[in-house]
Image 1 (cartoon, rainbow, N blue to C red):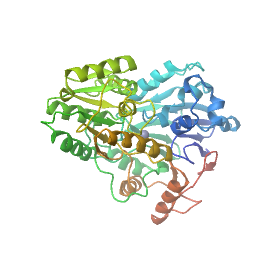
Image 2: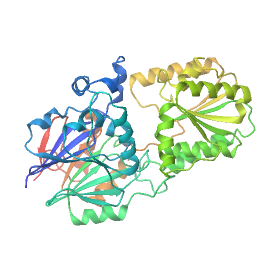
Image 3: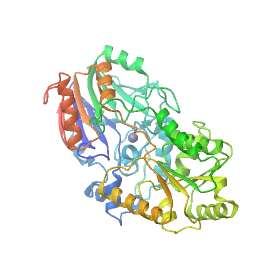
Image 4: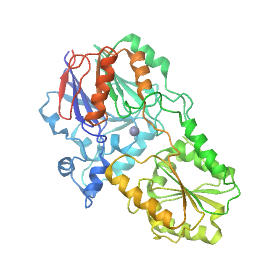
Length: 445
Ligand SMILES: [Zn+2]
C-alpha cells in the first residue's frame, strides 16, 4: 500500500492548517483551518458570507483544490482541537467531502456552532465526537486513535492513524504540560507504546522549535497571574485582564483570583461568551459562582455602565482585545468608546503575548499608548505558551522513534529550523525528514 503525505496548508505560514494522508485509495484529512491575519488584512472580508474560492485566493483557507487530482476517497476529516487555525475552514470546504468530521466533544461542539453560523455553504457532514483515549475504525485498513495531550485550549488530542505500515502521528498542536490547570497531563505511556509498536511518520508543529528548553507549565502562568492580581487586594481602582477567549484554563485562573480578592469576575465579549459558556455547559470547567458573562455589544455596554455606577473595585472585567484588535472591548475602552471610563491608577493586565506580526505590534502599540495617556498602569506578558519548545520536541521524537518526520505549523524559517533539529538527531533531509511547502506531496514508503 502506497502512503503519501500531502501538505495542503500551514506549511508556508502559521495558520490555515490542513494535511491529507493517502493510504492506497483512502484519504484522511487532518484539520481545516483559517488564517486570521489574512482576513483582517482584507478588511472588507466578511468570512461567513464569502465562498471558498475567494477565501483560497486571499490565502485565508487551505487550497484543497489540489486534492481534486488525487486518486482516492476521503474517509474522515479529523480535527485535533478547537482553535480557528485548525477548524475555521470546516464550514467552507468540509461539504466537498462525503466524510464524517471526527473530533473531541468540546471541539465538535465548537465546529457545530461554526457550521450553524455559515451563510454560504450547506454543511451536512456527520459530526462524530471521539474522546481522548478512544479508537474508531475508519476502514478495514485504517484505525484512528485520539491520544490525550495538553495545549492552550481544553480537550486537545494528538490524533494517530494506524495503518498496515505503522502509525502516522499528527502532533499539532501540543505542549508537554505535566501540571496542567485543567485536565490530565499528556498520555506519555501511550505515546511510548505507540513508539514501540512502530511509527511510520510524525507530522509535527514547528512553531517554537527555536525556543530552547521546555515550555513552562500552565501552572506557572497561574502563579504569575495570581501573584499580580492578589497583590491589589485592597486597591480601589479598576483591574482589567485581557486574555485569549479560547483559553479556558487561563480564564478560570483569572476568575478565581478575582473571587479571591472579593471582586466579581465579568467575562465580556462574544468570543469570551462562546468558548466559556460552551465549556461550562459541557461541565468541562467550573467558574466561581459570582462569575457572569455578557456577549453582545448592547449587554456589554450596559454591564460596563453598571460597573461604573456600582464601583470599579467590585468587579474584574475579563475582556478581549489583547492584540489591540480594532472594535474589541479593550480597544474601545482605551479609546473612550464605552461607558467605562479609565483613569489614573486603573490597571490593565495582559495575560497574553503579542502574536508577532507587524499589524498586531502596531495595533497593540496604539492601545498601550492610549492607556498610558489615561494614566493606566499596564502589566504585560503574564503568559506561557501553548506550544512545545525544543526539549519537548526532543522528548516526543524519543518517545515515538518515527521513521519519517514532516515539520508543519510554521513558516519556512520554523520548518527549516525543525529540519535542522531533526538532522542533529540523526534524520536525513529529503530522506527521513521532509521540508515541504503548501501543495507538495511526499511518498514515505
Ligand atoms: Zn492551537
